[in-house]
Length: 212
Image 1 (cartoon, rainbow, N blue to C red):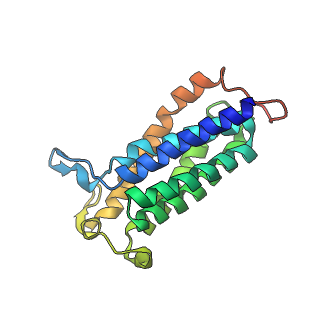
Image 2: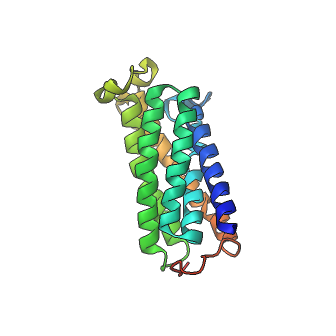
Image 3: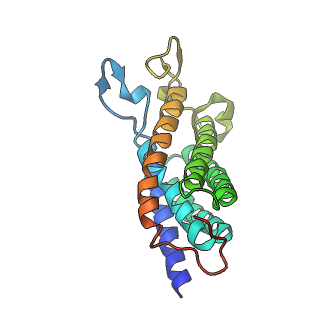
């Protein structure tokens, strides 16, 4: 009974994070800092999506990789349906593909490192997952190479300063991808705080390999 209730809570949390991120990724940040247009660098989705890795890691810690994958799949199934309603089909496809592969990589890395220092598994799992997720999402969502998935976003394809500090220009979606990855890394570090705080509450169930 406890596992069933907790499983549903994890699925609902995962669904909320993914649906919110699919919606927010369509909106670049407004304003500028020192002449740097934030819209050339980041979307709002960069701040919400990394929370998905926290949900996955807590599930993995408590119930193991098998249940963690079920939460990812269940969250994905519900979220992808809702995403088609609030985002373009191309964004939904890109998000779903990136989500599944990034989260599965996080689960694999976490499980290999779970017997090491308490912070290593969640941090490295989220970092590796973030790299893969970012590469898949932004290329699928905006690169002309994947135009078969849907029409290109003209704004995303416009030239923009690469990260606003490097010389030269690149399509705006590449700057978004690099900015998004930077935020995911920063938020991944920040998520160690709630993960560490919840370790005494979210304990491995009997039969789950312990160590962190």
